[in-house]
Image (cartoon, rainbow, N blue to C red; front, top):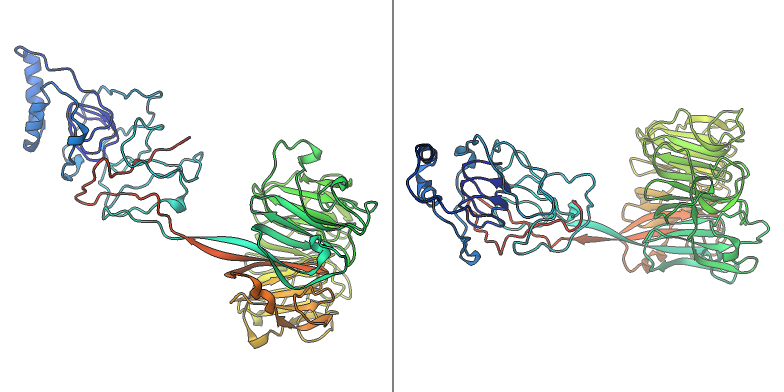
Amino acid sequence: WSGSTAQTSNAGWWSGSTAQTSNAGWWSGTQTSGAGWWAPPAPAASGPLGGKARRRLQKAAKAVPPQQQPQQQQADRAWERPAWDAWQPPAWETSWSDAWSPPPKVVVKLCPCTDPPSLRPTDAPSVMPSEGPTPSPLPADVTREPTDDPTESPTGSPSVDPTYSPTTRVPTYSPTVRESDVPSLAASGVPSLAPSRQDEACDYLYWGAQEGRGEAPLGSDQEVPDFVDRPVRDACAGSRHSFIIDADGTPYVSGFIESFNAYKGHMGVPRDDLEEAMEVNEWVPVTEFRGPGGSDLGYTPEFNRVYPGAGAPGNSRDMHSLLIDVRGYVYTTGNNDMGQLCHGTTDNTDVFTRVPGLPSGATAAAVGLDFTLILLGDGSVWGCGSNENGELGLGRDVVSVDVPTRLPVLEDVVEVHAGLTFAVYRDAAGTVFGTGSNLFGQMCVSTEGEPYTSPTVIDVGLDVGRVQMVMAGRESTYYLMTNGKVMACGRNDEGQLGDGTREDSNEPVKVILPNNIDVRMIGSGPSSQSVFFVAEEDTVYAAGANDRHQLGLSIDDDCVTKPRLIEGMDVVPFLDRVEKVCSSGTHTLAIVCQIITKTPTSVPTFVPSQSPTISPSDKPTYMPTNEP
């Protein structure tokens, strides 16, 4: 703002001939206290005043309140910059809008900056802030990363112009800090810390067939959960192989390849970097990525989600895998005989290659035997690959597609999971749909073996509540209800429905859980005949196939028909939350997280109360360190 006579506090950029201020930032004027950068005027001319000059002084004197007239008289005298050590803050005065009036013309004197400021308020503020300054929203291009501790004393010229809030008289700066680290604004003048922030530090557990994590000898099993102290973003089991995404977003793959002659590239690593036959591959980094059509990508993506290949038991060949990076781009690799890689061809590849043609970023995906489903942020589902069993819901006449194709009917989808040759979906309203094979009744209805060739509603019974989560196994489906109970349908040859029998069911059956516990999450996988139920207190129960100890139960039974508690979870030195359980036909990975509460302590914000007593050495100066 600008004016000839004004009274203010915490002014930012302004210019005036007579002013009273505290904690001024950048300005030019004749009288101030606590100024940062300023330029004193030339001494007053000596000798008698002319008529016009005398009338201007008389008019200016009338505009100054009585309590400021001594300062006005001093304004006519020659100035010298006051010593900083002598500075004392004035008392918090009444609103500057009471005394302010715009001049007919103002000359703004700028500080010796490289670039002049581009933002200046043009009118007087309309109201005073009720408590503290209103933080301005950060511009879209500001990096929301924490800077170092605030400068504890006034600094030189700011690197960027301050950002103004039009209804407050205090300019607010936009430091490059995360919102979660910014201290809260308090009216009392006492520095107040932001609410505690919770982060998760996640590692993983492994159990089942050892070759799934690249450990010899072949045929050996990890009978109970083994805690791996290795921070991860994601981890999942595929058929005789596994993927993890490290804390820095780098994928790693491990597992067994029977023969290079049959290897189609599902690990995303060229065969020259792998071992075959009786050798195993232990956590090989995935480092090569390509753009659409095999073009040079130009950078290394950072990944968040992985979906390993799914095959029949013992298969280590005809599979494909999928990654989603932090920007929502999808990458696929491996077998492509039905166009399941979504690349527009049927050529196999052993390098993760970006999928073209998706209208927006992906949030989740599902990988079946020879088809792929991709869930986008707008709730639409896109697919490619085989539709021989109606997996993609594209009708009876479409055998396969090799480019991403939107599935009909489905809107506002929030979950998608695949079995070997079918898929289930849940929308935001809790409605469940199915596509593909119903050979074992996994759609919870008898169709005499006929598949669902278009998305069809699955009825699990309204009397048991609304569905809040779905999950698919190899040929079975599971439905978590809002009351914490679980219903299941489909194949049950290994007891994987958890109803105490080994009989398949084409109608929903209730999973028999010990002590009638409430479940909050279900885990399985497209090649798995095992299932896991995570209770509200983060205990885990398992049922189904256990021939390779893929249930994590140290028992000799090859299958379990009623869910049992996995007691070996106590190997985790911390266990605040089980985030995910992902199983294949032979082994299982689970992500376990520790909740870490962080209270920021390094960036206090001092906000003046009704009578602040802030000195320049106490008030931190927030200065952006790089770009605004």
